[in-house]
Length: 130
Image (cartoon, rainbow, N blue to C red):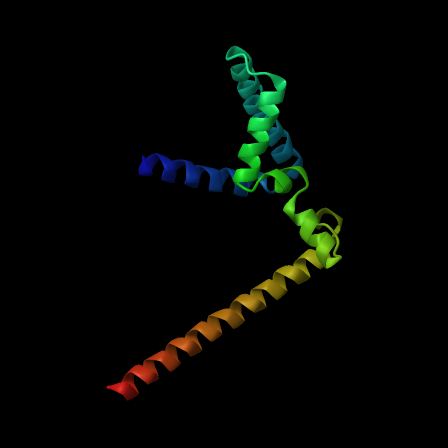
């Protein structure tokens, strides 16, 4: 089972990397997948004679239980950007996005430096206690 999961994880990484360069194609293929999944679930619910009300209740309970209800229908990026009073990613210019990437890179470097410093401090404490 683990090999199958690893295979699909790597496949997903490769496909996502390639499709991320073509967002319209990515969105189109993604929409086909979502619609076919919804159609299959819809047909399955019809086959077992699940009413609309029961379907809505079960679906809402599932989505709320796993934390996807709000993020799916509203989107976590939209909520976060609203709280921070920022632009949505699709409204940002290429320059703004590049600036954010550089800033995140700098933050990552700072965190790595802090980790390194903490390891050094821990090693010196261990050496002093021996």
